[in-house]
Image: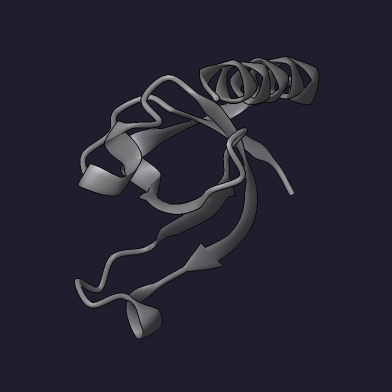
Length: 81
């Protein structure tokens, strides 16, 4: 798969991931979306899989950077308790 960053969140489910990098694990489209939108299913560092539309994201070339961000998110989650 590939990596994206939530650059322009438009919907409630993606707003909390603004600026974060996640791994695209699938796609969704009009056939399984109540609003007939298309987009990506993205797994973020906290383990959540969220649907984002294509206009909300930018492609990321360096998965190592994404991995570092995912690790930082896991560490923050652990420290928050």
